[in-house]
Length: 120
Image (cartoon, rainbow, N blue to C red):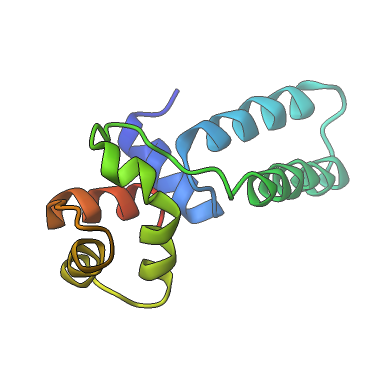
């Protein structure tokens, strides 16, 4: 129905973290609108589906996405990396912190890929 680029764009516009939630919304909304008759009230009340999916996404937000991350140190210190990023630290600062406190060497690019993948 949509290209991957369009799915990413629409997911971002509607406030979803990933395209899977957007696809779930479009399927549910499509089948909701498919029922007869189609009225303005039916369309407007269909947006409760959107709110329901967004609420479900916020509840599952504490899950960490490890897709494409092979580094065991990043997986071990994932929560600490994300906490440092939310405090405003950059990739180089996080690398320095991990080395000073845990004697672990992780590249800046891996750290940045990890926190961008998790929406920070």
